[in-house]
Image (cartoon, rainbow, N blue to C red; front, side):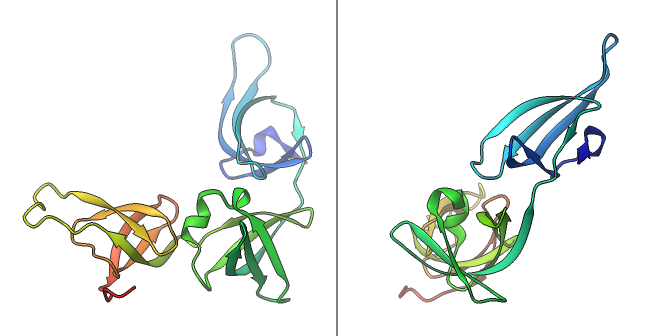
Amino acid sequence: MYSTSDFRKGLKIELDGKPNEVVDFLHVKPGKGGAFVRTKLKNLVTGNVIDRTFRSSEKVGIPDLKQRKMQYLYNAEGKFYFMDQETYEQISLDAEQLGDNRGFLHDGIVVDMLFHNDQPITVELPIFVEIPVSSTNPGVRGDTASGGSKPATLKTGAVINVPLFVEEGDILKIDTRTRGYIERVSKGDRNL
């Protein structure tokens, strides 16, 4: 069991039988009454964020969570299929379970899959991924003084803002935490 004094950002706790992650917390010691802890918790199954207040002496459970390295294989009919790197077992997740992460899944990428009570709940992407651009508008020559950007659609279907010099076929390095462009890894060919 965790005590409220153990709370920190990123701590995973069990609340009402569901795994949650502490997004933010604040220890409060009012002039009258007992101390308490205000928290923002993200449900790891549904992705919902809730506010919850705990008394300072309250205890919460430790969830049964395990992480396994899984390789993304393919998607079909709204299901995304992954293979365990050790046992070669295949597991599928729904698009809802993946959320925005599905826009950065490309063939062969290895992710950390989180399991709760031996049921897959979500995936954690590598911090950086390299994905080709499938379509983008051409940049306007001479319009670089403002450091402008334009939308680009990646091969995986995700749309991100990129600098004006990026063209179709270029391979980009993307930060999956911010969903933002980092750099152009290589100039690609135009025949994607």
